[in-house]
Image (cartoon, rainbow, N blue to C red; front, top):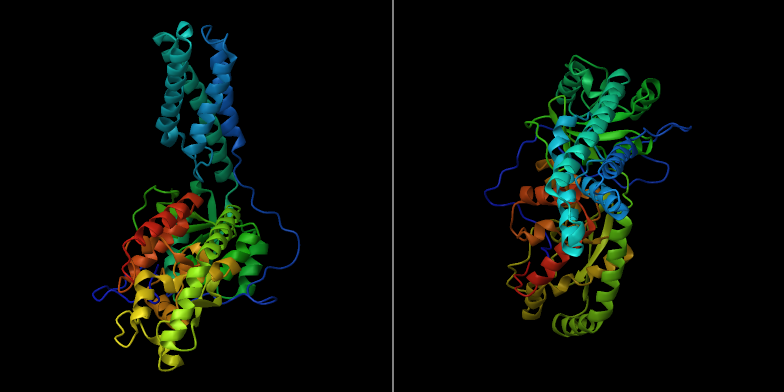
Length: 478
């Protein structure tokens, strides 16, 4: 399904992200790593969706009761309310930007009201022609509900903007000293963002003016308590300080990834703060990951039952043709940089342990038997990784795991590489179904893998599995 190892594109050059090299996050042992002081600490209060939903609901109810032509049809009013709320939820209108601006969402709000009214009017005309709405009622309903909803949402956003300006949240900026100080200075020049940096977390200490530079976990802990820090601005690849970010998230801090070197623009969950493109980070496990684990167990367990005869046949033929040692075990790096033992059918016998750990690829090995070539070409040698999925070391879908030697190399060369370890590694992934297997660009893989993690959904996993299954019809090998 995927390549056993990865090779940089021959002409590909690593892109400079303007940040420090990324390293693999070590496994977090009990009692070690970054820890916050014991004691109660309330989590940062997130923005409630209820006021905005209430505004939309009241606007729908009042409009429905105000129009005489609609008043006799309570089901129409209920459908209107549910339709508008559902469409607004789908458009993330109940998760506004950190500093909400009503004019930004005005077209979206009005469009969804019009769509709901038109859809319901069409349904009434189709199923109850005698009660069809007139064009005048339709126009009045859309205009009245849009006006009420816009006025209410504008009031809610105004109160929230006023609150964040009057009571800004103390924040730490994490990243290379020069970049972090520049980001901190920009936020301090724009207090309307509602974020007030109080310190910089960096490995560098000298040569930069500005906020205090914190270099140790103890200094970060002290700043967290003394300043009541509630937000963290991450101006470097998040994977570099995984344990610290996880501890800060557990302490109730909101984490924001700040793109300090690119023009600001809004897309795919990004917001503009102080002129920077920012994205909310979710370091802690999501509730939706329960669904991902359920999918992994259900599919891997079912497939193991179905293909167990095939696995037995492959093992017997491999034993007869290539001798003992049918199962290949190799250390790979998984989620949060934790090592695990990956299982495959053995298709190549390295000279020694050093070759096994450091050789790029054996796809073109001439000494490989015909049956081993067949296993690799059809990706049947990868099927034993279903056991890794069932045990919880891997997932069906995720970034492909690599050996520690190459992870260390790629983490130094490609700053986005270690960030791939935010999620369980997988048998297949978004990069693989887009043709990034074998001798392809590591930088491209980083981009696809991180895009998959940033936009993860259970449906995306299902789509990738279906595309992987379709690709097996035309196998290319690894």
